[in-house]
Length: 73
Image (tube, rainbow, N blue to C red; front, side, top):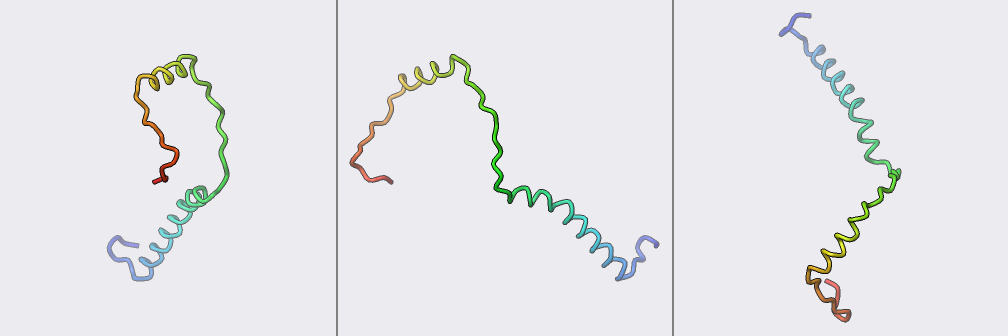
């Protein structure tokens, strides 16, 4: 087969093969994204200073007051 002299059938065959190859390469990714399998990760303990930092941050900031009778928006 010479470059530039492909027949219509050869081009069609090449496109079919390229499409099939693309489908084969993309299918596992698409199937993996559809799965509802939960992936459990190990819990990472916080360093001892982190809870102290969070408490200090909350005490420094003026937190918004909550009105329990107001409608939720």
